[in-house]
Image 1 (cartoon, helix red, strand yellow):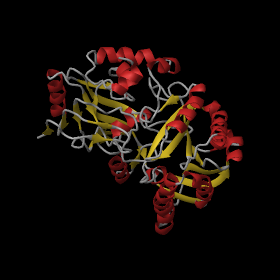
Image 2: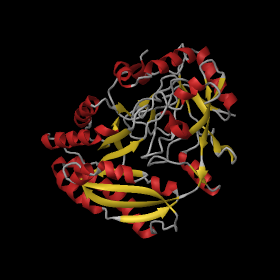
Image 3: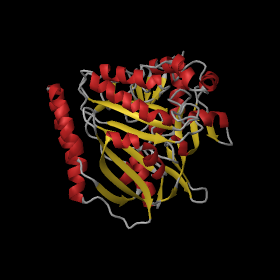
Length: 439
């Protein structure tokens, strides 16, 4: 049975605490039939419907004052096809559970983001990605999906079946329907060797093309107020497995990256003038290290310090110039930024509203500690990103609207036309979608 909480079912908050919503009712369907019934009932009551995952988006993409669908009972692996090398999972399955289950079966996704708390449908619908020279976002690894549309019917989509819906719905921002199951392409589990080391900002930017070309997965963090970066290179390895030691792992990933980082950010929030000095110390705290492990243990890491984030994809060839402009903006301003800036890449893909749609991309993510005013920093950063035809991550803070997107996404009209066809009454609309897609 599904649990339906009616009336003032309370306030829903996202992970960062910057978005709240008060739905009329919440529904936790235990089957696809219960989900379709909830969509039909919402239509009868004249209410909008949104499915919400773990709330890891910083935008109000999932907020609703109508019916809130919680997918936590729609979880688990439906099946693994070893001939086709695919896995089909229920939409509410957390990435963490998928990664663990696949590893037990001797399988893995090709690439993934750096956190795995999100549900598979929440992560893919907003375009969550890691970094990769040849391998793209999580959504680009989708081979098929099931979608409950506004009239309560079920659409099965793949390259062969409803291909125009498939092209768009892999990153659908919840605008086309509610995803109930996803089929991912998988491969036999492999080993990745990670090499983390400090490098100066000047060297990373001067050698970026080389670092990008020579590594399957390259990313780096620049610490504002310093000329210091931490770099990470992940490449496939023949082994042997050499995981991070329990003690050193705890020191680097828990104590320094989470515990001490939390304390440092609290100090910076209370006394912003201390931030540049703290940044110089923080940027030198993590030492060089190498380790070899299965993919999810290398790609992902715990993120316990809460923050607010903006991330833009710029054409890859514009990365270095964009980043240098960001650095000189911070240096000229009175801003005090305690969080490192994260830089990653993705190859062009063929998903209608993917941030990497049709172009090789580089991502620049700016963060602020939760509870710290972030508007001035994000506004100044966004001006730089948009000057380079940047495309914001659908699940992260930005101020862009449909008019802007129609200029930076060549296939934007294709998506909105499909939305008109699948959801003419805007059953899945909310304020965020009205802004980014038009009404």
